[in-house]
Image (cartoon, rainbow, N blue to C red; front, side, top):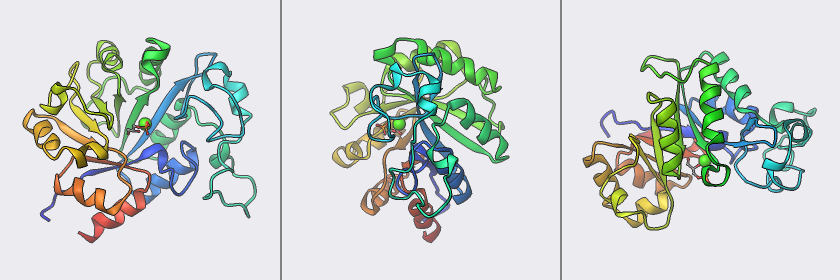
Length: 265
Ligand code: G3P
Ligand code: CA
């Protein structure tokens, strides 16, 4: 199949094999050879950006309640990993697989890896918490020297959101950071089905269910001059489908599975 190869992103670090959003999962994904990492960020009560997907703590930690009502110190005392079937129970305690990951720490680890890495950062949840998530995010990227993107930067950040408003905020504060407009399974607006993205977003991020349901979507996105990153591609049939469409990025919980499949092609 020519030399086409999409970028492979470890969704939440690759939550199938290891606890999602833990440093250990991200480091393993880099070792496995992914092109990039996907990460969700939320604000703690005291204004820190932490890598947690859910609004509530119960699914991925031994804590209870809302992430946004806890301080960083409170969250840091929780176990975010030993619930996961992939947690190695016979080992000594493994902080990299149990400890809360802050965005600051993830950025530091990515830089220290010495690898060319793309980082997809999704802000949660712009409509609920106002502009603060994006403001703090751009501030942190600036502190790490990542807010002005150049094509040869070893670490390249892209910000993603389901909310057009969030993309507008990022663009206003850091215009060189590319953005992804995420689209849910629900029927997208007419603009998106015609390949039109809001507020200068360069990349469309439809869920794989949407790609299945609307075969014309990827061609429309491409015809409008945009790239397509598809989530969350974990099954062989879905992977085959998105590869047939020659999508630009594959976001997966199973990076090893996707990398192995690409290696076979
Ligand atoms: O990569 C996009 C995807 O992560 C969006 O869905 O719910 O996993 O954040 P979610
Ligand atoms: Ca996400």
